Image (cartoon, rainbow, N blue to C red):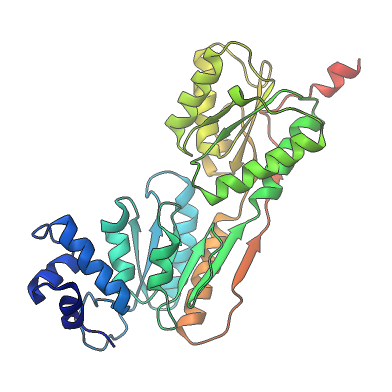
Amino acid sequence: MATIKDVAKLAGVALSTASYALSGNNKVSAKTREKVLEAARQLNYHKNGFAMDLKRSRTNTIALILADLSGPFYSELIRGVQEVALSNGYDLIACSSIGGGDSTAVRFLREKRVDGAVVLAYNMSDEVMQASAGAGFPIIAMDRIISGEGLISIIVDGESGGYEATRYLMDKGHRKIAYISGPSNSFANSLRYQGFQRAMQEGGLEEQAKWRISGGFVRDGGYKATKMMMMQGELPTAVFYGNDEMAIGGLKALEEGGIRVPEDISIIGFDDIQLTEFIQPPLTTIRQPMYESGSLAGHLLFQMLNGEEVDMFYKLNVKLIECQSVKDRSKVQSE
């Protein structure tokens, strides 16, 4: 097994310099840090955050790594993972992957500061997870398909959810449908968009580029995307928002513009966060099992920590929740 001395030798730097570089210390230049990190990758060296180059013992802690700790979407997921962790006598550390390769989340994985991790972060690369996971360090990857030793994938069937949401709007007589999307590098968003496209193609409907706007999966993004859509003049009869947070932001923008939901325009979301039942009108949406997926991830992680066999891939189903934000135009058109 490679040691930090081996890394320093291969990189051609002093032992202290290698230690600083691997710890993310700004005492070394970016060029030197990259040279040391490349040497560590070549040697498959992983620094231990608690006892460098000594045999690692259990920390009785697991990490939950999220793209963003804010927002109502994550609360049920966190609760699902946390309850499983506590029932197994473990602590849970939740952290954000914001910051890329220098983030605390990446260091938790690379330095094995915890015993395993559940990762729901589209902004964390496959390479980091594949380099960190192993037989003794399991990682449950959510909303992505990834392979490698110690890696398990859990996805929600967003493609069928996107399809069902769009078909629902079409069955209600809508022919001009917009899609407000999440981040372009989000696997979950790509699945929902694929479902939207499939339904539109089956229905013989043409997607209009002016109505495909990114809202970044955040409320303010949905608000701004809806404002942009409104500024272009002609409005669709319905909008499929890639998640509920964007739909709530969009609802505010429409209200400010004097556009009524669902009388003037219909909207549908995705996630079924708790807040949707308290807004006016209550939001029709696609429910994904947030608590259940977190609980499943936790159970799989502890099964792997106990040396048990588990499947490499899991897909969870979604369900349409019909509320009051979609107008049925089919009856009007048939009269």
